[in-house]
Image 1: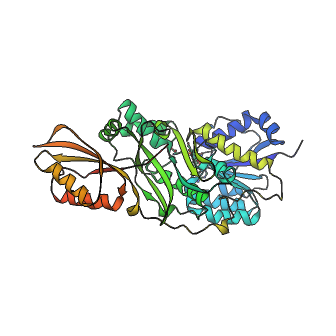
Image 2: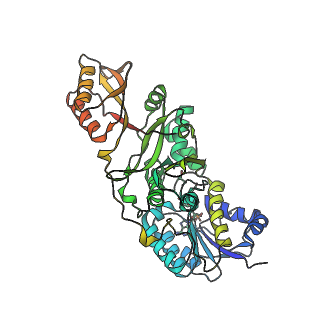
Image 3: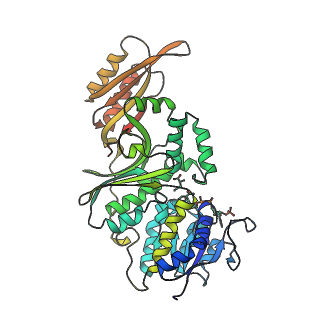
Length: 438
Ligand code: NAP
Ligand code: HSE
């Protein structure tokens, strides 16, 4: 029998405890698949007394992740603590410096420090695997890093946050409040330690930054992403979307354009009948459009203990099967020092269709004003729908929903500024971009 692969797990929460439990319950089949046993030799978390649902007999406890990372009794350091800096960063850095392979699910950390850590790992001939960091259980990193080597992607987009998709799905299906849906997602272990990361789009942005680098061979550029979250999406938007043949999804989109690469995260109208439009609840989906293969869509559970542990254990198994001294796939698909600088395409030049929901005073001239300003800015309307009267304080108001043909973001902004100037609007317009989707 070959030598066991010794694992140190930092973080025994939703994901870490699932990894430890599955490594134990699936040890026989993993040994057969990897040709050697995989043994947890060290763990750390904050609370030593907490029951984690697995037997810790024979497993050494460490007081800090950095002490575990420095242990000579591990071959692989598995970071499941979370956070872009602090204990997670210090311990991964220490593990690599100490010559240990690393597996992490930490997209926040990779979005900020991925390049720096990739440089260290590649220089030292170590593996830095992070399948669970993007789209939970979906094997998207391996797919993009290895299986699509014959491709130059032109667009990558997806539902990358389970919590946000769970909230949007339940708001639509069960007509319950945003807050109630979020509390359920937290209870189910989907949400980040700070759930504003889920609902305000930062978590999707962290994942998108990683996918963009893999797709286009550019340096990870998380600070260059245009971000809008879902906290201002209302049931009125969801109902209007459905009436017009769309559903609202929080998408991350990376697109190569003539002026650079667009990276954007925002609530998006996708066609009701599209495959991505039918991806519900905590399920994630990633679509890739590329020159050789055409279009791909991978979907599966994006969060939760076992789904995420499945990806973490796949990464550990790859290390168990790796041959010492053999060149492994570079961390971001090509050597870190060969990644190109990221060239940003501004959101103002984004071209696409738009959904615009307006609450207007019910009086003569409103439609003429709307139509006039749209036409003056070269915007062609695909549809215009007026909903029944509603009373807003002492004023009669109406809801008007416009859907445009392809135009630019700057034309939309200019037209709406002019509409606002005419004084017909009761509140700020709700503008949601439309994304063509298969
Ligand atoms: P979690 O349930 O909050 O668990 C975090 C663990 O880290 C806990 O065991 C905690 O200890 C430990 N910890 C926190 N700070 C520590 C420190 N300074 N020193 C030692 N231990 C520390 O988080 P999680 O949901 O498992 O997420 C872990 C990572 O996976 C994050 O990067 C997250 O973004 C990522 N991820 C999560 C999911 C998911 O569905 N949950 C999916 C994909 C990726 P105590 O238990 O003692 O408090
Ligand atoms: N909070 C994240 C989500 C976990 O809801 O998708 C998976 O990365």
